[in-house]
Image 1 (tube, helix red, strand yellow):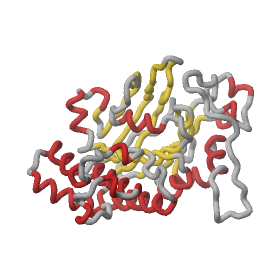
Image 2 (cartoon, rainbow, N blue to C red):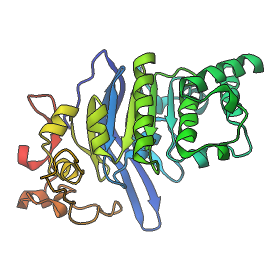
Image 3 (spheres, rainbow, N blue to C red):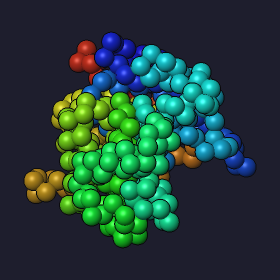
Length: 325
């Protein structure tokens, strides 16, 4: 499979990754032969419908796939080190310090009996062994970076709004100065104003601290507006990759085109949004050939028989579709 080229600027290289979940109904192929790279200081968006394998991809990078899920094939190289070859102890030293994650639901990720300052103090001391007073001073600075004042240091998670709890999660993710932050649906269940503020905060932190960010979301509009590069996921695979201008201006894959058309645009009052027909496939038994062909308006006979090759085009973008073979 052709894919992104690795360069000296590549910080994360995922090659031919397969992460499966065995169930009583069969094997769920949540991530199925994914190749994807992220460059240093890049803001990479991974976008797709629920069930496309985005969250499992993020969890796979940190080797936090919940059992019985398992990475069965491929490699995940971070700064030249294959994370799948590390021991559990070595991987624990990577999490937080080099790669961290902002999880979907902060209320279930935070200990309701622990003060928010305590969450960050504990994380710093666990990884770096500094004194409690030094850790508390650092925690206060990190909370201030995400817009939480020192007067809230001893408050509990239930005393915060959803947006403020998400800021706490971002503070936890950056408190050890990692190189890569994976944000898994960080704006879920937040209103649009708070969503914008959270994404602004992530963008600002990337600029100030040189982070590489991977934003996992179903919101294509947010990705096109803010990310440098966009990877479109469908049914466990990456079907298109390009810059935000390429994806937002002239998407190639019919699935990407459908996502874009289903995104409301208040600036184009004469343009009607439309939905993608049909349900997402059953990942215990995905369709033969192109997995999108049962929902595709451009499907041809070959689409139901042969899996399209994922190829790089002259403009640098990557697409897997028989329309471009």
